[in-house]
Image (cartoon, rainbow, N blue to C red; front, top):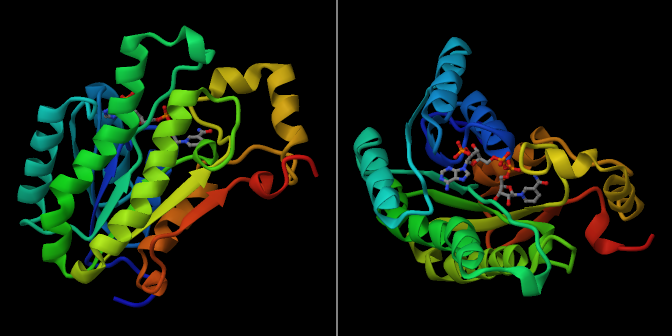
Length: 256
Ligand code: NDP
């Protein structure tokens, strides 16, 4: 395979049925990777798998709720048997949010956001490590957020989970470099997906977002998946431990 191809590589993308994960599945598959994905809704997953088959992409998948430990173990079992114990690419994309003022968060809110965003990605990385190592050439990308880089009004628990992902990016990159596994993080600002659809319909909200965004617009999922794919290519072989924002310029200049 060439420097700009993922031919012969295998990938796991968590949460591939909508939004950023969906764009990442298609980008990796178009570059030649064989992809495995998952989500909680069976019919939506089957629709996606059918669509991808029609496009000639090599994608398989199964239903799992990655906020649940046993389902994470089960997922990695399936990935391991599908790809004969080897995996080149792990994209930790699953994430969700509950927006509240800090003092309004319940115990359940806390567990839900922590499990879905941080513990799931941490545990999937632990479980996938032997497979990534066995492939001889591994790459992990965490889908974090600019909320884990600067303070935005997205809710403190969400922000903490994303900052934690940005930190373990550095730790895992150092710890697993000897296994030839690179680890990077991609941190988007507002991207048009089902996660933020309703928020972006609010005129006041969108004006506030655009006033902080030099490019004066929100992003598209494909504008994130292109960077994610690049980080997995042989061309990116010297890039590890980095946190890269895809944010229309927002993070360098909150008031430009
Ligand atoms: P969406 O909600 O549009 O898509 C999320 C995908 O993940 C869906 O396929 C969903 O399917 C799946 N998913 C969600 N929870 C679980 C779960 N517990 N187990 C398995 N699958 C799950 O979100 P986005 O594409 O917007 O977000 C993707 C990532 O990008 C998240 O980590 C988010 O924090 C991050 N991000 C998004 C930004 C944005 O503006 N959109 C900005 C910055 C970061 P299903 O519901 O069927 O399970």
